Length: 99
Image 1 (tube, rainbow, N blue to C red):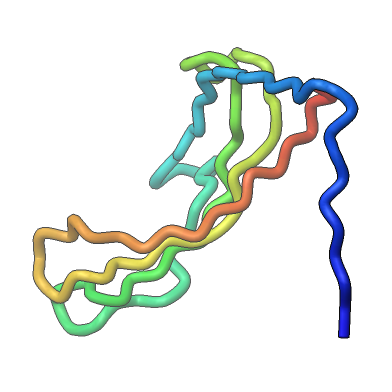
Image 2: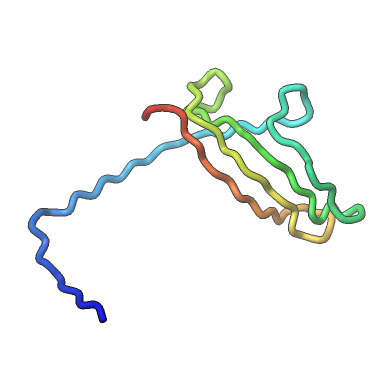
């Protein structure tokens, strides 16, 4: 059996809030593409299309902005019709900048 005790807090809690705007750059259909279709979907509906991605994360909207890291993961079409508006995404943000 375990016993627990609650001790008084001897210092004030400090809360910080940081707001950032980061930009992920997705490039299709060129020699510098940073995503690829790895599983082709069912029939002509593209249901199940699965893409892997390695998108750069920058601190500005253009490609000359500082590189902060990469968004790495995959996304899959989860709607069985042609409008393709439902995607499941699993993405890790891997930061390489010391900030």
